Amino acid sequence: MSFIKTLLITCDITKDRRKAAWSALDLFNQSVEMVTAFDADNLNMKEILSSINSDSWSNRLSTILPILIDNIQSRGTGIGHSVSQDAYLLSQQILDLPNELRPEWVKSRILSPGEVSVLLKHYYALAAIANSPDHDYGLVAEDDILVHKNSGNMVKMLNIFLNQCEVDYIDLAGGAGLEVSSAINNNSSQFVLINTPRTRTNACYLISRNLARDIVNGFLPLVYPIDWHIQYILSTTNNAELDSLRCYWATNPLFIHGSETSFYKSWRA
Image (cartoon, rainbow, N blue to C red; front, side):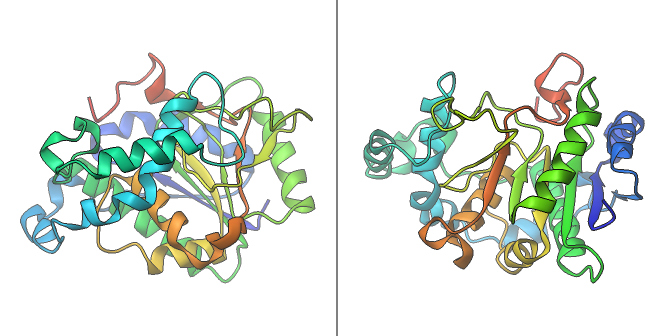
């Protein structure tokens, strides 16, 4: 799988995770580049945050809120082909409220230093993929991924899949309780097309060089945490028009998402 450029996002306070994450990525039989710059402690947060328009959070919310609500409503039942009408109606009710009356999770706020750090690390990784002359795809992983007993077979299945299908984005590690509905995966495929392009947790994802370029070109300013941020760009990039963006989710994640198990404590906690 030499046509995949592989990058591991990590930081100094989680450096004890690197060995396990590196072992997981070894299944791709190629070199791994560690993204260690942009740690939160080394950033000039005052200068970075002063460049962000405080209205951007609210101004962009209408684009992604129906998807976020549909994700919440779909936990336990699975994501369908498209966003439900109920999600659109509820999102409009929330958007009609002033910010101070909206649910806490959706209120406009300032990004934390850790969130800015993660955004910049993904930005670097995506730019490296976008500018790579030798790789059709890139794999971006955060350092809380872990290998499990079926990871090797699933990596082989991914290799076969990429040789058979055109792909823009595949979520590989799952998370947040988000699964594919059995109603749209009646053939039990390992990788299922999501007609309304969505991220899950960005713990590990494969992305085409072309989509990486689109995301890098639209990445700034920094407005949302990384999963919402990429969701917004996926929802506004030209490739996403008329559901033409080829976004897939792995039905059986290739790796364990350590921060969603008892193995690792999330840096957000």
